[in-house]
Image (cartoon, rainbow, N blue to C red; front, top):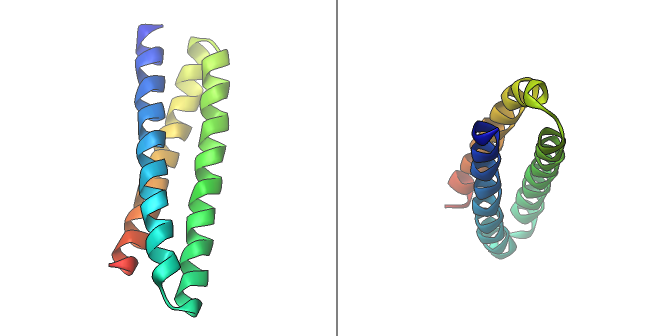
Length: 95
């Protein structure tokens, strides 16, 4: 049980960090030229949608037992990596 709670707290902390990074990226995207701004905003919205999907998976994990934890942990880990890669790509393009 403790392992699952620690994992949940780790993912929730990651979500908060992403929220801050997404805010910064949105501010930078707003300063980009019109065509680029549309592209960046689209990518940012996609990342937000992926984060929301992960958030739903995390809620599912919190309601489930140890079996749910084992089944959903991999999905969450993969999602975390995908979002982080997406954030890094957008950040590179905006710099």
